[in-house]
Length: 340
Image (tube, rainbow, N blue to C red; front, side, top):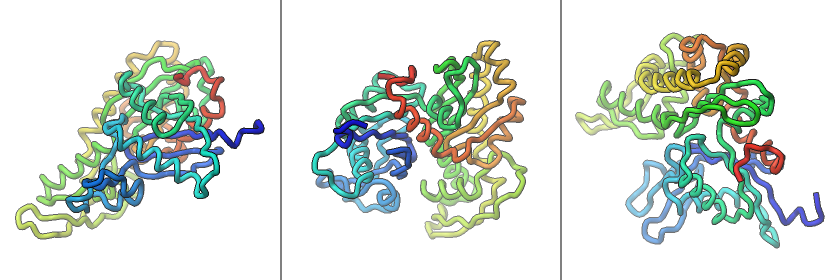
């Protein structure tokens, strides 16, 4: 650390569709939902993160809640910049005399276009970053899990996030082949909402669908230690009156089946593209899973049955990508896979 090190702040950001995690000094300092609440009249940001999430689906006409990221990429440039700026302010409670210059490593989906990549970079620069490097999400997940990515052996990573599912084969510090599909946690929520509407004639919101997914979500219909049925409240479509129904994990597994089948097909597609020598390594090491979507009960078992390979879910999969981004930040100039 130099004499003027206090003038530079190094932060690693996992800018996710559902959650944003910021790491500073090897510690998770911010973990908030990626959502902002905006005053329609003045255009000012009222709340960011958890506070904005509490408003989601409950606002009147003068307030709108907005998710700046869709499918892993920035959909609303100004809202994303305001959200990044507000979340960086959450790191320090006391105001510094001189605002430090920021050095950032941000993770991006591997199937991103150059225009989308530029949008992420510009948003960070507008939010006050002097130096920005980008890292692909599956690479960050692999580092976060603890895999030595610079070794000449192949590993396959599945990162099931909020907006995208990234499947990548990694060797020698680079991505050999990858498949990025825009089916992930958000689509699971939509499937649940759709199922409730069709099967039970009940309308539920995004937050309720998320709750169902977390509490009774499953990928297969027979799991060990099944969760108890969950009472769900929503609006009856016939009468318009609020009502309660109970939902079991088997119903949720049934509603998610189509989306999970697409993820399975993408995994098989990525394995088909893998060079034979790396396929031999993968047979020995198996598949690694990270991201919040990998917490879905039975998803690892379902992928294991489909691929006939062992599947390992990362410890604390929600933060695996952020941890890897933090390690990449420490090796800012050493890692060959940080995109300048």
